[in-house]
Image: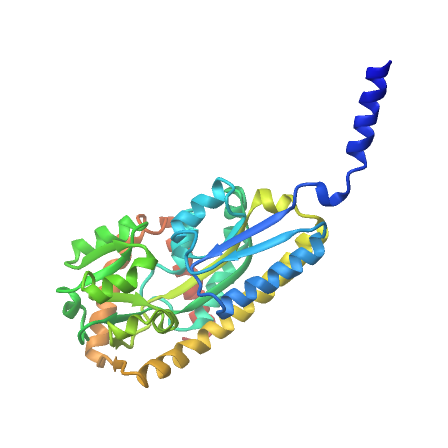
Amino acid sequence: MNRLVALFATLALLLALPAAAQPTVQLRIASLVPKNSLYHQELLQLGEAWRAAQGGGARFVVFTDGSQGGEAEQARRMRIGQLQGALLSVVGLREIEPSIAALQSLPLLFRSWEEVDYVREKMRPAMEKKFLDKGFVVVGWGDAGWVRFFSRTAAFRPDDYKGMKFFAWGSEPEQQTIMKSLGYTPVPLETGDILPAIQTGMINVVPSTPYFALASQVYNSAPHMLEINWAPIVGALVLTRKAWEGMTPAAQAAVRTAGEKAGVAMRGKARMEVDEAVDAMKKRGLIVNRPTPAQLREWQELADRLYPRIRGSMVPAETFDEVFAHLKAYRDGAGR
């Protein structure tokens, strides 16, 4: 009888423990974005909205500047539960769902942000379903500007770059194979290795958005920028499905609202920062190289040769064709 009394007393004590003694719900988000940047601030606001709606001592942490590794590593950490989310570009997103590469890996395809927006929104429902099937929830879409080529010496034509060494993401072997087949020299690295590599001459060219070139100071060692919109950097904030399903309905609604708001803010600011960043770097010595119409034709001819190689390797054939179909519909509808 004494043992039964003790058992009931123990159960009563456990049930009486305050909510604070229960495990704390955490949402840990990683990204390569710089600390205190617009992107970081938007993530913090989303976190506060989630924390307030989730309640119960919920904790939100944002890891910036690649402190959790490159984007491929961040995707891996989400899979094993070390992170619950990440703000990734297509470089990391394709580690989850390869077809997303269609929005970023087709050079000189998009002529404007309006075209990027149109194609993304057309593909968005099916793309988000693919991510969900892989165990991830997309809560916001963003972008980070156009990729330009920053080099140590002046270059205008595609052939001018053949004697140079390009930064290439280590997680994109297909791209490296294509580059080598065309006579270019890719050097696979992580984003955090770019600055020391360009400073030491390990690489001579960095494909980068102007904002990143300014924030990372890459332009000091690569002071020549080719003014050509090679491709957009497209990204998204994704959460693991496990973390999502562990949220209260109120918290899910708060994250949806905040994620959509953050995406709009990121896209709008990033597009403004292209020109702002170039102007800021020009004041500090950046040289902007503008290709002639004839040189631009050479770049377009290169892109046209790349598309058949990209289709089915870097971008699944079905998704590749879908992008081109949406873009044709947009241009036909817009009278272009």
